[in-house]
Structures are given as structure tokens and as C-alpha cells.
Image (tube, rainbow, N blue to C red; front, top):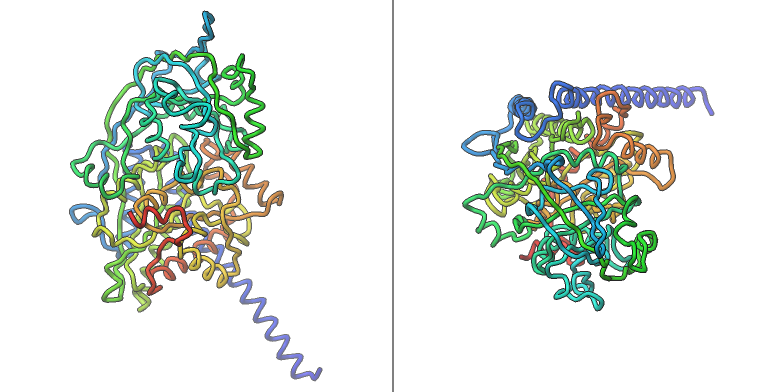
Length: 543
């Protein structure tokens, strides 16, 4: 190799190394900029940003201030950035409530918090006293040939006036998306149609993100429902899946460690049911030969809390009338909520700034981009559900939702798990942008956790709008998997989700660039996003 060529190659190598260091420095700076938003939103002074609280409104003012600084147009009501949403608030008075099992002439009191917890979300009656029957997974999917509410052992007529007991999960031959869907609106309708008094749900330890003690602690938080609106009938006619079921019903979650109390004397055990559920096998249906007596004391109030909406108008004369949503939620209960989900709001803010800067330099997206921050996600996706049914832009103009909910930059970004990847053409957009960024794009490896239906994009899915949600990915058993599981077990929905936890700022910056480019790809793609004919959720698009 001659001396001149050696010098050239050495210079190229030095330039490559310098560029790599520069990218690393830039990533770290951008990561710190992203983290600065999280530090504001998850500061102790925000008191967890409880829906409708003064602290939530202060967090909302911060978000609106950033949108204004970026030159975004308001997209809320009355020419502003806010869309007020009114909620009914219900809280269980545990000191005045009780549960007890009755078998023959024997009554066994249950300890609230230890044995079971009561839900205020189901609009419970003041008292309930009814026999218990076990209906397996509690999935109502007659169109797929599967219906736990109308089995050979317990036909639907046998459920009237009963309290049904069900276990989380579903048989292996049902797709994960279908099982997740069955846990939402169809479940409430099936309970009403069957005329049941209440439902006892037993989570499987395998499906639980954290231990029972934290589940019981969170039960002290108030439940919420959307207050009645003059347009509710119109929403129900257009998107029936977005409407609430207000039928009074007892709702109980039972501690799996205490669940043998329900099965004693039946010839079956909870351990037997759990083994079948863990193996995703069919479950039997049978009478539990006991009754549950419940006394439920609930206090009621009302609160109003806003969604936040801003927009960047598109450049294409035709496509600018269509919208791509970039969304997250800031609400957390009494905890700081740094990863869940101040991190997502911070990425929305960074994306808004980046796209605004691109637009200022002549790179305006063809479709308009709608930046949304939803209230009351933790209360049942209520803010997003209200927006999906009462959009502040023309009905039918929203074409896609790219949602964020604790995407968890805990380690280097090599892979993303994208929920909804196999459902719509948005999956092709995600794969394309992933390839450009050197990121592996994969589907949800644990669909039975029902994650896709547990955060805000599902409100838009039910309105027929294609959607994606994404988190940092891992390989089973890898250090990244262990870090993810440790975060769920130790920090998720706890006071440990604070500003002191370790975060990979470089990886967060890299994710933000991917997310920004994905939003642009969807906004610039001349083809309208749509569900695949093979997708179960295609039914919402054609309703």
C-alpha cells in the first residue's frame, strides 16, 4: 500500500471516528433536552399531575407554552389549545365496605386489600348478594366460535342473577389481538346481556406487571367515567365501541394468592385453573357452590380536566385536510410518573419542535400533524376516548395515531416492539423507518398482557383509525429483558418512577429521531393508512 493511500485511509478513519464522537455528543445533548421536559413534568411539585388537579393544569400550561413557542396553531375548542372534558369521580370508602363468602350456613369474611379489592369504575350497587359461577376466561367471541358466556356447562340463561368469576388469559388458538379486544367493550356488553350481578376477576401471576401489594395500594385511587354529553347518542351510533356501559355492577379483583377460597369444595382448585391458563388451554365452567355478599360504600364528585391539542398544518393542497396524530398522556396517580408518561409527553414536545423547525426551513409535511396530550389515561383511556368521539378537527379527517406510553429508554436502542404492527399499513411505515435507523422492528412478544388495548391509541382503533404504539425491545432472557422486567416490578405505578432512576439519554434521543421520521413518513405517504383485510380491527374501519 503506497504512502499516499495510507494517509488518505487514515484521514477517512479519523473523520469517521470524529463523526461518531460528534453524533454521540449530539445525541447526549438532545437526550438532555428531552430529559429537561421530564424533569419539569415529573418534579415533586407536580404531585403526580392528578386529573383535574391544579398541578395537572400547571403541567398543561407548560406543554401549551412549548407548543406556542414552536409556532404551532391551537387545535382545541374555541380557538384555544384545550378541550375540556368533564368526569364523574367515584371513590370506594373501604372502611364502610365489606365482602364475605357464604357456603351453606358458613360465612367467611374477606379482608379488603389482602383478599380482594373493590372497583368503583363499574358503578357498583350499594349491596349485592348472589351465587358464584366460574366461566373460565370470560371471553365473549361468538363470531369466532368461542363464548365463555354461553358454554355447554353454563349456558347464558344460567348466568342471570349470578356473580361470574373469570381468570385472565385465553386459549392459544385465539389471536392475541382478539383476546385483548374481548376484554374491552364486548366484555361489558356480555355482562349486561347475561344479566349478571357482578364479576370477580382473578389476574394470573404471569400476567401481572407487579405484585399484589401495589395492586391493592392503587385501589385507593378514585375511579372516573365520562360525564354525559349531549352528543353521546351520535357518538354511540357512529362508534359504539367508544361508549360507556353504565349498568350498575359489582366489580371485584381477587388476589391470586387467596383465590383457593373461591374454589374450595368444588372438586377443582385454583392451582389447576392457573396451570391450564398458563398453558393457554381451555378452562372448564362450573358452579362454585357459594355466594358472595358485598356492601359497597362509594363517594361521588365531579371534575373537569382538559386534553391539549396543537397542530402543524400540512403543505399539500389536498392532504393538509388530513391529520396524523402524535400523542401521549401526562397523567399519573399520586406518583411522579417520569417514564409513565412524562417521557412520552417530552417526546411529543421534542417532535413538535423538530417538525416546526423543518417546516420553517421548507420541509413541511404534506398531511397536517396533530399533537395531542390526553388527560385521564389511567382512568380507562377517558381523555382519548372523548377526543376520538368528539374530535376538534373535521370528523373523518384523522388518518393515523402514533402513540407513546412509557417507551422506556432503559438501555441501548437496537429493537422496538411495535404494538399494532401486523394490523395496518402503518406497519410498513414503521419497518421502513426502522431500517433507515438501523433499528429492528418487531411485534408485541407478549400479546396476552393486553398492552395494545390498555393505552390511548386503542381509542382511535375503536374509531376505525389505524394506530401504533411502541416501546424499547428486547430478546427473551437478555439483560435488556431483565432490565425491563425489573422496571415493571420495581417502578411501574410506584413512587420509584421518579427522576432518580437510570435512563439512557443517548438512546432516548435516537428514539426521538426515529419517531420524528416515522411521523413524517406517515404524513408524506400519499397512500392513506388503512387496516389490512386480515386484521381483526378492520371491522371498526368499515363500521
